[in-house]
Length: 305
Image (tube, rainbow, N blue to C red; front, side, top):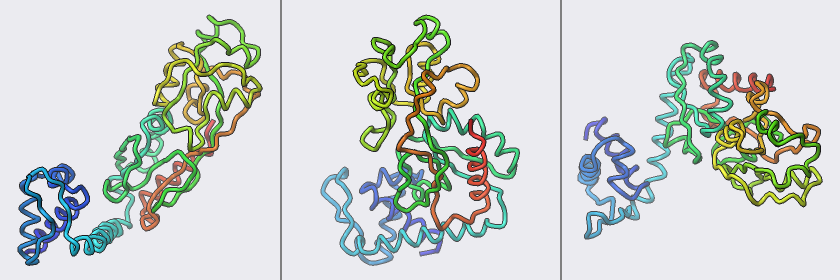
């Protein structure tokens, strides 16, 4: 078997074993299921042994043989080393594509409004932004660097703290004019509250109840109101005058600075248990384009409002 075909066959086998499906592997590799099946069969013929227990139905879940299961960790490790070797060939330059992952809300409210500064600093680097609410597999999705929100611990990744965050209520100038002066947190009783459901509260994500307890107004009923699962949309709902949102300082920074949102009771601060972190694979830490982007993120965070 020739080297390029051999590598393609190994890639088809690994993807099929990971997904337990030729069809899903084909979607990942951007080829047809028939092509994946043929590559796997050619590898089996070359090895002289089957790699999967095949059921009677074409839709049956692919199950690797015992020998295949033993070999998979080394095959995956080999692909990782090949990928790293290719990256190291690029280490003399910051040029090329840098794949960045971030949540859609962080990308919209913080990263994209500032990205032109990075382009001016490193015009030779093309940023490919992958926005996703799910945590991406840096190896499988070929991610270089990302920004995650949490407690700073993700297996297999280096995490450097980027920004801490404060939690406070905000509303639009128009909403405040319609609803009169609010002199204390108790005045929020009966008002339309906007809830952010983008992060699970069990990992320490602050809720309206948390802020009201901190403000000494625990008796205010925060059980009702608009519920939104995207932090950017939460702020937009407040900007559009639909109620009072519990804002995250990093997300709301630009809207507050522009006057689109007004912080309420700014003397009451609630520090989030979560923070923003720059994340990347340790073996890629010296890539010039990654270093340039990481340093730029840290510099931008220092100047954060």
